[in-house]
Length: 454
Length: 90
Image (cartoon, rainbow over all chains, first blue to last red; front, side, top):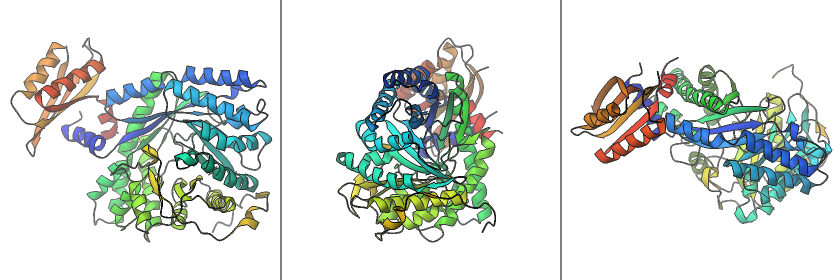
């Protein structure tokens, strides 16, 4: 039987170390809503989402009450809308009207974000992919809850540089259209390479076509718990360090598995995966950067950071994999800047640059995340940053992403407030040398060779 | 059997256990295990109880225990046992 010591340990994780279930994300297939008549498609989308997700929030609240574990977000991910609107959307505004119906459905079932306003491109854009991507700035400026992502490459197909070029412009346009709210639209737009079909975390969640009709995916989070456990291992060697992370990750993930199974039972919807990611929040003590510091770095970004992060990411997976029957999504450590107080401190101290963040993304999920850059950054420069990050994902057979915010009217050193879980961020320096001729070439970068690994 | 873990944390004083046990008895909740410790003058108690025969919903039990906790100046939580079991047992 469970003993007092174990009960106290679990409750301390929840009450003092910010252990929580970050999200229960309900994936919903919308392929059966597609058709040639836009009005009919929109009605079908609204009806299906509100029917399947009607008890989602209540189920999340019930689990929270019964187990005493906070469930921070209840969210929905849908089939990439570029597919659903392909037959009925003739203009970008047609797509925007679908975004509005998604927003309304999300509001009516009480979730805070709905993901899947997406185009999954990897070799080249279809006409509907391109139309959806062009509609993103307006869609994100007229909705509250809609999140968007675009995949632009994969290890097997290479990178569609036309989409990369276009998205540089789209990100700038989104920043401009949401300038009255510190360009917050860009915080809801992710560009991916090798995007997973079952990621429960926003803004990059969508319900991929490899998934069933409806599925429950869960993301747990507990950087504070890992940090606290490591405090007891100060000065110990790497073996002890790794074992401590692994055991902690196991415990955290077990909670996710339990919540996922309970939600699946309550909603009568199959359990998909648990995403093992360590996801920070701006709350003090809920930071991945603090874990890196606890390992012995003065700040995140100091020499040794990439190695420390590689170790952390790997041990989280090793501990988590055994704790869950199905693992998926992004599964790793997130290193967003604005959502992690330790990362913000590191940038403000001058310890962490965009280039170091790029190096860190080679060894962890997911990529350049929630980074504010000057509003006058050129579209081609943003495309260049995206291309670099996509190349890292393509060559290393991993998911990489860019969620970057060129904050309208702000310059290096200014501060940006997004509020809530999105946090606040200092505007970071971008390498100002040009890459126009490279980005303007057009076409695609071929898939990398999979032999002669070096 | 539906097992629930009740935890009580607060400053030690006379009658904490008596008050909680009375509530449990009045609501048909059987105590299976009970243990307590005092850490730095703080009273830490855990009970494992069987809630399969209570007429009350889990939600009511959580709320009423919370209310009793407020009255006697301690924090009382009720959680399904699975969360502890899953975390600490393979």
